[in-house]
Each structure stands twice: as structure tokens, then as C-alpha cells.
Image 1 (cartoon, rainbow, N blue to C red):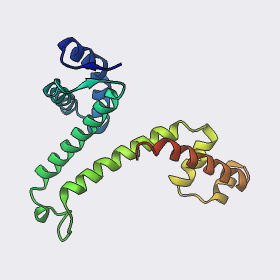
Image 2: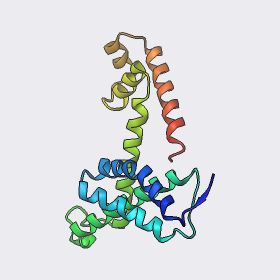
Image 3: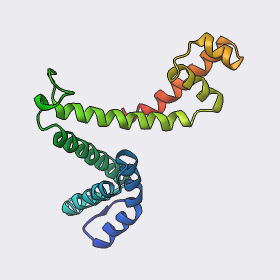
Length: 175
């Protein structure tokens, strides 16, 4: 069902339905109450600006989440620029030949991907999750994992195959 956003009560319903979810997303990335509130506020202001053209559909939630993520990236970009007025002034950037906007964007996107990966790994069955974490986070070999967990190397490989397949399946739409 699609509804035009022209009516104020539809906008209010959207706000009531999604503000908390957007706020939680912002806070998880910024750890700052005021910044999170401001970002959510900005998302809804932008939505209201284009209310004449906006139609509420099943994809509205995804639109709001992507808009929020984009505003979070903008926030980090502004933070980086204020802390490092020019790339040549920054001790971290001296002698580097790269665009600071691209760098901060990539840094923020990397953080989003890490968080998404963590959520997917948390959904794995316990043993599979344990094997995956030992392999990828503690950098243990298949043999070391097998010894530590008292299972065969083949079982370790099966758990890793299952975990990687599950992760790929759940992260592919994001990527």
C-alpha cells in the first residue's frame, strides 16, 4: 500500500513508528545523545521538505535507514574536517596522497560493515560461532581449533564453511 506523505498525520505516524529505531542506529554509531537526536531530526526534516513528492511504501523503512546512515557518515566527515582542517596539517595524513572525504566515508562504512558482520555472526549456532571466532578473531589454525575444542579438523572445516556461507548469504544484500 502506498500513501502520499502530503498529509501531516501520515508524517506523524511515520515519525512515531521509526524515530526510535533511527535514534538507536545513530546512538550505536556515535555514542552521543545530542548528535543522535540531531541526526534523526535532520532525517525527518529532509523527509518533510520533499513531502509533495514522497510516497510511503514498503521501502520507506529502508529509505529512512539509508538516509540516517548517510547523515552519520556526513557527521563523521564534518568531525574529521574540524579536527584536521587540511590533509597537510594533520599528523596522521602528512605525506599521504588521498582524499580525506573518501577516507572518512570509507572509515564510517567499514564501521557499519563490522557492526553488521557482528550481528550476523551472533546468529550462528553456538559451536559454529565459536569456531568462526577462534579462526577469524584469534587467528587460530584449523588444527589449533580442533585441539582446543576436542573435535576433528574436518568438523572445524565444516563449521567454517557453514559460517562463511551463512555470513555471505546475509551480508551480500548489504554489500
